[in-house]
Image (cartoon, rainbow, N blue to C red):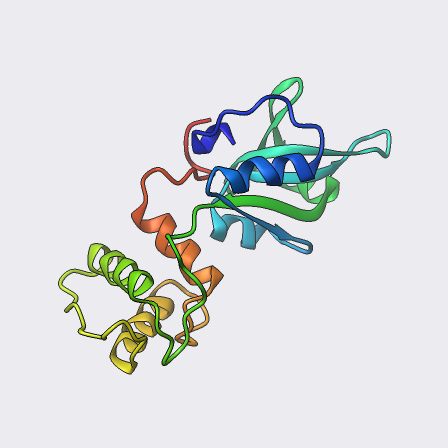
Length: 186
């Protein structure tokens, strides 16, 4: 939460964590069977469950990830695990935060959401100048869908033209300097 600029006291449960995050305008996402490639692609700090040598599971904050190491923030400070050791101890669960654009929902062809489409076009313009701002009347149109599909292909995402979680996360990652990353300072 601190990486997102959110102050909180000690939180003892996931429910408390989720409540504080959501009240601060953050979305909480949980992946059950993530892999290292997925974590590198997401490029977000988040909670991972690590099996201790005692057999006990402990949540730790993944703050860094590269080709050699996973860097965790633990109760004993910062610990770097080589990727093989991390792979053996990590359960595959990953909980991370992200900030959704105001009043945003999944967008499909024909959907109407004027503020979401304005946000979307502003982000696309920031990434791919010069992108013509399309007059959509607040509707997700075919020309805008083509722009999204081109962006999705460029980013290695499924180019289905649907503005869903993966597309939103990548747009945030590329256009919002305040988004914490696994390559950032902690």
